[in-house]
Image (tube, rainbow, N blue to C red; front, top):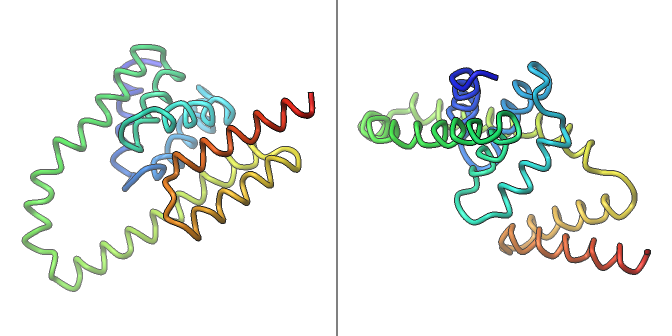
Length: 173
């Protein structure tokens, strides 16, 4: 894929996401479903690699860019992540002056709801690709329960799940 096109696809994902994994639906639709540059498995792998490395939660987009276009793809993804950060200053200035207006508040609430729905639309297909066998369902359910019921950091839940799968694989084999 051409560098500029990949940058624009990744920029669209970063501009339409509001935190962490919110870019997944756009990434999945554009790179897996429409353009067939990645498979769900590759997207899941890029997500795991990007989420287990230090840095911002949206850093996985650089891994996605790498899988889609090698080193130039990773650079395009990095630029796509940085662009909204540069644009945030004028946006904050604009929104800050209008944040108390009822219509602006309603728009912001609606955007949050839409973002939740969009995130769910990508999460379900990725989960379908990742869930296979009783152990994977148990790990996913336990991880969800822990994250909903406690304030444990996501990284620790992921590390514990990985350790559990290694232990189980060692015992079974």
